[in-house]
Image 1: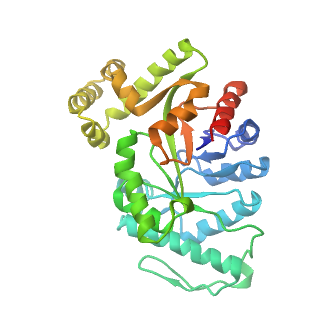
Image 2 (image 1 turned 60 degrees about the horizontal axis):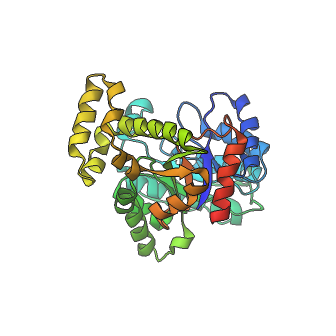
Image 3 (image 1 turned 120 degrees about the vertical axis):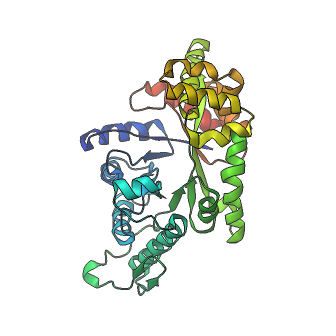
Length: 340
């Protein structure tokens, strides 16, 4: 299990220095999520500022971008990073596709599957000079002339990860993708039942091995260098669980642990603007289900005990290593390296 992190900045001029610091600390990967800004621009800066760390969008929105356009973007980033780029893709939800991007919402799971296969066909044309002949239900690509062919890379094409929550997309990822970005709000049992088991079914359907696939997830850790720091972090984690728990989407997760009444109280408090009272609804038992707790040196072992072999990479909530004490993060990374 390797330790990765993410970076959230609002200005391209603020990418290079923190990316270098994150790499120097020893993180496995640096992911940039698509929120207010285009992650590929920030990743281009990070690619030229670093030399070892893996880089990618945690989940970039597929459908607002044509597969050919994204194939070019990923190809350039793989070349610039000398083989360190990871293309993470997701569908987003219907409302954002239709109302924020003005797109038609049509069978998103099958469309994302075809999207991945189309990009692979385009990359095969670039890398192996094969004839471009892709025709599916949603996309058709059959024209590539020398003027528009960027040519082969000196490294393999990028791996493609999928970020999703529903069972169909999890199975699809196991069948056609190289890895998976899990949603961060989960307990180990619900993650296994809703995500991991479906990914493994997809791998089995395609005759693939679990070792061929990378699963990464944000995780909650109540950690610190002493008991005072641990106690403070526990309250931050308690507040985050309460915040997520007030969302109807996560009702089933609370039901899976027989916390139906807690969910209803959180929902009611959120609707009546009692946000400051919501963390008190989260018991220590609940915190223990959502998070691990211990000194920095304990965290890798505790995560392995909780998740077993489900995860290959983890990102820790509340982690902003580019802003914090580097010695603290090096201490945690050293613990991961020594444990694995």
